[in-house]
Image (cartoon, rainbow, N blue to C red; front, side):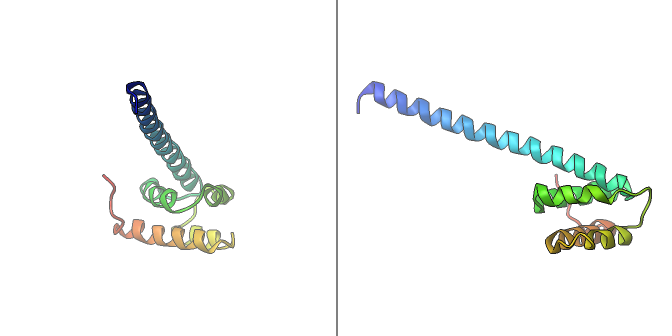
Length: 116
């Protein structure tokens, strides 16, 4: 392989690594934005801010964007955690219910592992 060809291969390899790094960084930003929006939706649905923050972190890691968007219809001035889980049940999405109920239980009891 010629020196020019080797240099070109190294340049493409570096560009590929840069593109991957950029994509991962952007994915992290999108994930953080989704977490902020979900936390806000949970607070708007009447959940206490500390529990909403804990649940949002767990839910954005486990649910699709389409599933998370379903939660936007559950706004209410004030409701208990149990009432919120019952409202999610009415959305007829078993995975959404499972993740929400699990997150609610772990976050309310303080058993959810904290991310550092």
